[in-house]
Length: 266
Image (cartoon, rainbow, N blue to C red; front, side):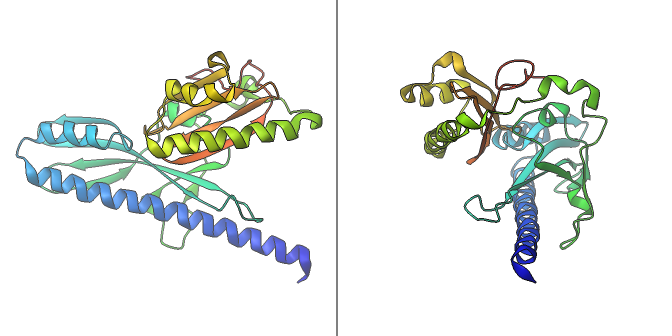
């Protein structure tokens, strides 16, 4: 097969394994949510109270809920990640699915795939290396149901110029990578101890010499869209996102609109 052929095969295999792991994480999250929802429904006859308490307790997954008569609806967003960043065939894949979980009577639950809210799509935490999937249409070994982001929630291509990121000059890429590593280590330690928001991130980075004014962030690491993050280092930007305990940071120049992150809502 040759060295090049073997490398390509390994990369393809690694990509499929990463995808399978991401799907398995989402399926596990959904199974736990269903079990918890049924347990909550069983524990109280007050369905509106169950709706509210479940949405509050499952805040990292439930982004909205409603009740109409006896029918409870929870809208949930699940994200799974696969891939080993320490491998030479490094291929990290982030997959997301959004579902409507509905209970009309007793312990009955039904699931429907829905389009994810645009604000999640526009967060740098959900970047070009991520994809949406229709989990309910996805067979155990079938990747055909993985689909591109829907055009009804994405901005048209001709409106994306403001998000274009400038390339770092070769002379400062090594310095930028040093910043990325030290920021990643500090944030990983902090998020392992508890959720982070912008204030928390700025507090973690201040002792490392990063001024509060250089830190851009929105969301929360334990929220459904995660925490979008960027910091100006003097050698470009370290940017990316944190969801749960998962951190993905990259290096690059500022974006055309200025700063390290697009403004929230773009």
